[in-house]
Length: 106
Image (cartoon, rainbow, N blue to C red):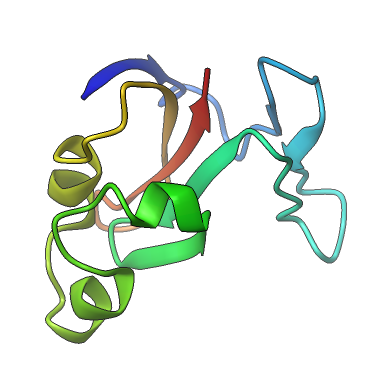
């Protein structure tokens, strides 16, 4: 997989805008703060996936259910995806070195 990581570690709860359509995918001002667009491949935490597009899940070596059930390393499986190209925003959750990852197809 070819991917580009944009590290947002220095920002506290940043809103995430899709680089293709400019839709606000992660908006902390809203109750339903996760609003994926058609370019959103996944929204995940080190603890598991919050959202995953069917097309992206098919590129993983194991299913998202299996990753959750066996408490596997989410970041490792994202990196192992066979998807051709992806932009990934990475940010801290502010707790115990956990991170959130938001991936967009190009």
